[in-house]
Every structure is written in C-alpha cells, then in structure tokens.
Length: 198
Image (cartoon, rainbow, N blue to C red; front, side):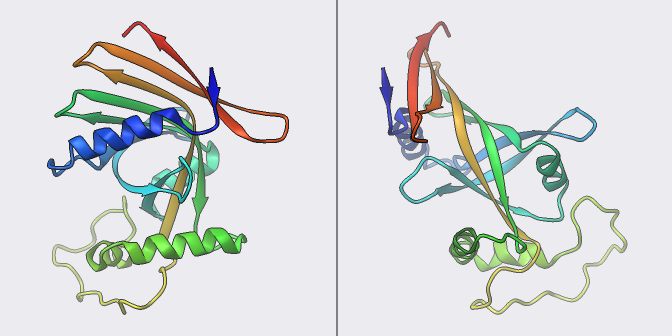
C-alpha cells in the first residue's frame, strides 16, 4: 500500500530519540562515487530534515572532494546504525549541492538558515585551509575570526539528500522493511513498503 508521507521517517525519528543519550547518535556514513568509478565514504553529521519533508540536510565544505564526486554523480547512500536500539537505516537518493553560487533564492535562504543554526565553532571550520591538501606548516596560522551575524562564507555548502529508497533493519526484533518512492503523474511522491527477510 502507498502513502504520501514517508513512513520510514517516523522510524528514524524514534531511533534518534531513543539513542539521543549517545554522543554519536547524529553521525552517519555518506557514500558517493568518484569520477574514477570507485566508492568514497566518510562520516557526516545529521543537520535535520528540511521543513515539512523527508529530505536530509548535511553541512560540508565546498572545497572537499565529495563536492566533485557529487557533481560527477549526484546519487549517494547513507548508512546509519544506532547502537542502543540495534537499528540500521540505509537511505539512498539524489543529493542537491547548495553552495554560494546557487541561482535559486529559496535554496540560498535555506543554506543561510542552516548556517545560522550551526555553532560558531562549526562555522569557523569553513575558514580553515582547503581540506585534503598537504599540511604546509606545523603550527596553525593566526586564529580565524568570524562575525557571528555574518552570513555563510563561500566554502560553506549545504547538501540535501532526497531519499528514493530506504532499507530499514531492526536487529532486536529481526525485522527488515524496504521503502521505495515513486512519483504520480502530477509529480507527488509517494512511498511503498515491503517487509522482507533480514
């Protein structure tokens, strides 16, 4: 049976709540495909869902390798394992890269909102040297400063994952459900679910 609301989202919200006492509860792995066709994986931080939806937000540095990989192939998968509740979510879909040059004013507002929702310490990371390049000196250069009221710096990038398939596994009760989205003729996304063998 199909539904317009994402039925897996409530499962994920419940897992986040039941594991919220753990420092790592908001960390998950994001896998992309490089231009060489090889997989690339890293840990990122969940920055919430887009308002009134099921799209997942991730902050990143626009100078990082993952941006080139997503420009080459915008499809990705996250894997999120909750150690207290023994639940795993594998969520794949297409990622929208929203950086300073995005022509859509609504997306730029969204990027700015997420920027201001981040801590000042998190925002300062985007003023550092380019990630992935060789370290040029042992000592850090002058301490960077950032006006707390200033908008996003150019290096700040918002990634928005639009899920199209979710594979949910609960090892405590030995249950596995897949959720797959399709679009109706009028463009409305709806979800189908199927219980499968773990």
